[in-house]
Length: 621
Image 1 (cartoon, rainbow, N blue to C red):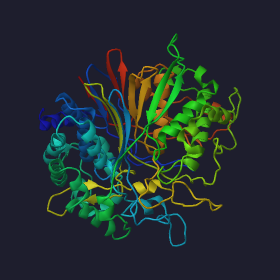
Image 2: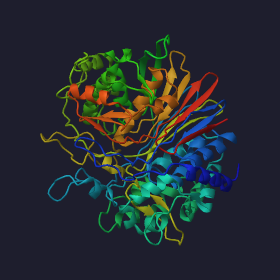
Image 3: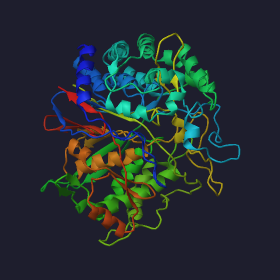
Image 4: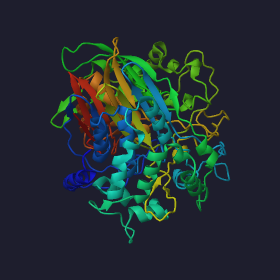
């Protein structure tokens, strides 16, 4: 493998040439608008990457190169994912890492599997975890910062499980790039520096403060070589002794100490929670989608099979509902509009998308939670994607040229459901990092991992052996409903319960041709609840508008939940905003900081795309 020292030098030169991010602080959200998981940090043009044998796409160039080294050495897609995630723990600590969880979809050429490495609530947790002494929900900041919201980390256990089944290289070899980078250091980039500039609460943790900031409390400048010897030692132990060394012994004791001894907001994680954690292999949630391309001209209709994570992820269901609802509207006849700035959706299409999204998120709020605790509606999650059910729901959408916004977007009642659950109130949801990989043997994966909010619980674990640094813990339990019951007293599906997995929006996706089943595309994004919209944009752009993955990623971002239509600033003309408002929509412009990564089959090779809104890249042979 090539020298990591040489690679960090090349990266430093590139980062110093990049545009410096403007404002690291996320704007305050409007009512009914989820907060952005991470602040915007500028954009840079991406052209896409072609390769013939294999490809890896991830959120940081050093992580991508680690995966590339593993694939070059004959490793599998899972091998490369392990190497990529270990480097992301070091270089993108605000988003994902050892202290968090993940979902992974894997296809080996025949079988598609869904690996669930989602965090679990401690065994001592109960549904009142996020209520104050008066029974009122805590603020997000009060809940998230400290030990209260820390769930049992699952990403490492999940990767170890996947490696046992699909790995080709020795486990220990996969940690070499991250260990070398942690020991030798890597250059702080513009995005990391910008996010640290706004990370006030992170300074309250002495371990994190000593690692990320200088003696005056200023974040390390762009180009500073940041070393993490504590993380190097932790990774070396895991590499030699296996994932169990993370869940038992001194590492487990250090995590529990950090959580339970927090001076202001202690949590309930125990050694038994860590020792008892198990990642799961679930059947993927797959559905057929008929793509009716409107661009380029003459493109034929084709059916594809879209596979994603089942609950506790809500992403595949919500995305599948949005695509299915749009199929029952005139959306399929509406091409993107062209402008000097590039392609963008028009106002008529955005109206239909917004209404479909509102209906999908209404169902999500009622039905979706950990399937080991909450039964699927109508005895199958596919009831929410049933063609007749979606056709019935789509009739609520006004599709004429002057049709107005629905006054209300209620949850539906699929066949066989006797609804007894209350809707979950809207609340903050954050996260994440995405990895897409296709290896030299045609195995493909899509993996989304997270510590939830930027910097997670703002707690850095260190064993106390005199080494600086460590790894951050998640605040993933804030993905549960803070309110356990509705105003009528009905239980909320996604309430806190012991050892339960919180609902997620992470939406890693694999797409296959029908009827042959040939692999077509791997993709996903960070972004909390916005992930669903970003991934829907990727699929609609590629399947319906005939775009390659980079062109689809470059499209302006848009989103809608239960409130306003959210549009990426300066990407839509005033006529679009005016037309949406005439239909009764509240329209707001705000940064929508996606981090889409995707790889598609193109001709006899592969083509990768990375989001210009973050630092991601693609590399392959």
